[in-house]
Image (cartoon, rainbow, N blue to C red):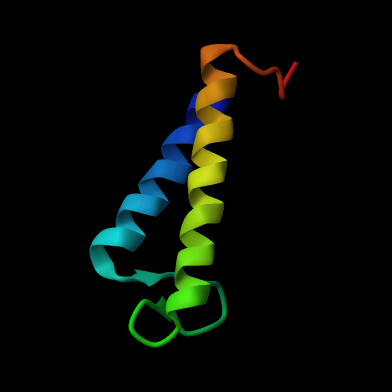
Amino acid sequence: MGWLLAVIGVGMMLYSLFTGSVPVRRRQPIRRAEQPAYYWFLILIQVAIGMVGLLDGLGMIDLFN
């Protein structure tokens, strides 16, 4: 489960960095040029999700017993 979380988090982060927009449900995507602070905040959240998934996948933390 940790590896899945890491792959999803890193995949969304890479997609957002390459396209310059973060897809959000029921709204227009958050674009880097229009809302740079909110865009980078969402990127940091995706990095945190990926790191937690990676640490769980490596067995350093135990989220999912």
